[in-house]
Length: 177
Image 1: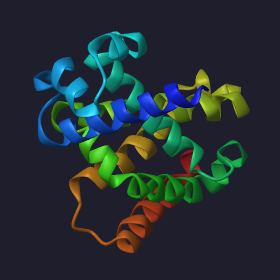
Image 2: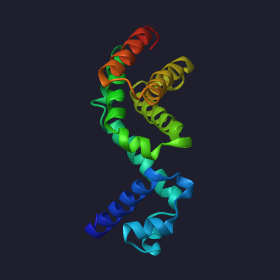
Image 3: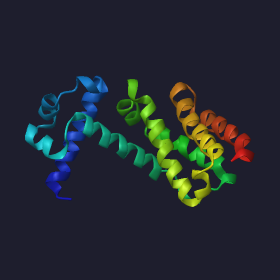
Image 4: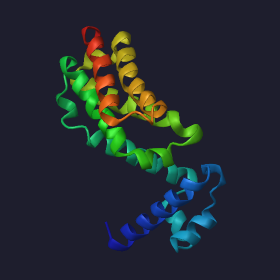
């Protein structure tokens, strides 16, 4: 990617995060983002259709980053899903600030849904039979979204207690996976 384009993208995203940290997505205007990023509106529109497209792109980047940070995701087996869930929890925690900004308010459930779909896709490539098995799909959603919502609803829990608790729950589910 051209260095100028890369710098512009970075300026747009940094300005968006700064604005999004202080107000809901619906209240952010392209004009104020451009002023903060020191770009003109035509430059913004050459990169994104609108603020919502920018938000969508940044949300997807966050999901991709979380997925990438799970070591050897493709190597997990039903017998090691507790270890996978541990990695998933640690991945959430490594992105706490960005998650709290991008997925705040009504957007909180978006991350759980996106992760659910992305992780199921990876797992289903290795275990195609999971894609057509409603019980497996429900259990995977329970593990993925359960971990995410436990993370959201227990911000005061220390990392080790949180991760160990979720890992123990998934370990109990192992015979069903």
